[in-house]
Length: 102
Image 1 (cartoon, helix red, strand yellow):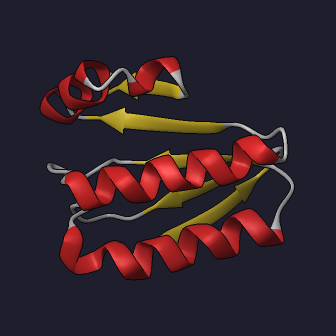
Image 2 (cartoon, helix red, strand yellow):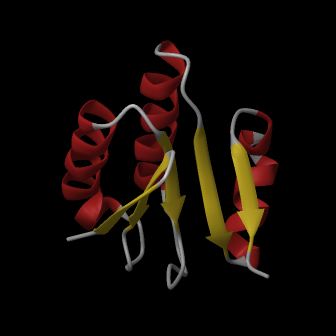
């Protein structure tokens, strides 16, 4: 279960575990709930996340696409170096904001 924090004009969701196939369906449900219940920018905080697999990437891209349709933004923060490399290789940092750890 992700931690969800409403902070001003942002809703922050922290999965707190690797975003991989085994947890992707639950994470997708939580993201959709956040997207549908709030009109704020959605921030995925990957603090403590060491790995994101192809299914996890798909969930994040789907969240971006859903937000984009309503003119809203997605931001992914606290991304570890290896995962950041994956995001940039796939050029996802051109579609939404991706911020590395410190």
